Image (cartoon, rainbow, N blue to C red; front, side, top):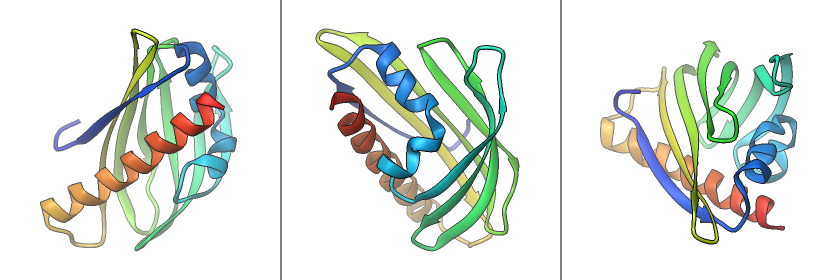
Length: 144
């Protein structure tokens, strides 16, 4: 992913517990801001989502897109846009999980392009807001 934005957070939970939260795509509207709904379209051989359609409502971006997911056990997941929406033209991201003393470090990387013209600094600030909100929501959800 070229031109990506990333951030990380420590979560007091084991990788399998966090991966279970991440893999529960249909639960995202409960903890991930800006996601109104998600419908899993295909499941992979590992029992985790392989393709999903989501409706976004994040500030200026209101759209419906489809993503394809590639899971790396409990070490992470990568996703790419497979059906662009009317606003989102490219979206690539990943969660990477690493064992640390007392918990798991989760790193979220994201790159989004849209039909709305944005200078690079504004685009990365928007990505950073999405990432930080998602990481905080993931932490709250995984630690409860």
